[in-house]
Length: 89
Image 1 (tube, rainbow, N blue to C red):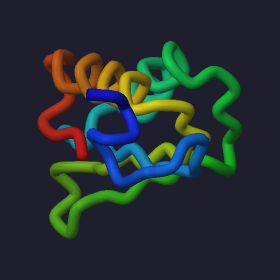
Image 2: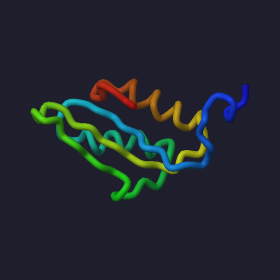
Image 3: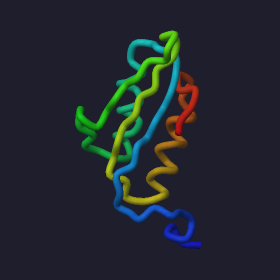
């Protein structure tokens, strides 16, 4: 099955990657570094950080220009494998 049959997305497209973890120093940098391994050239305006209401968690969203489903799969695989990242959406 080809990539186009496995997803409804049309590539290339803007795509938000969101990762969440405990509110610790360096989580934002970590998420951006992992995303940049697969989508080089992330600029500051493409990154947003939002703390949870209680301040225990933060979500980091990085908007990329996704090129393919395998690229997105690789990003999510690397994010999910890191011990500081609780969820990746």
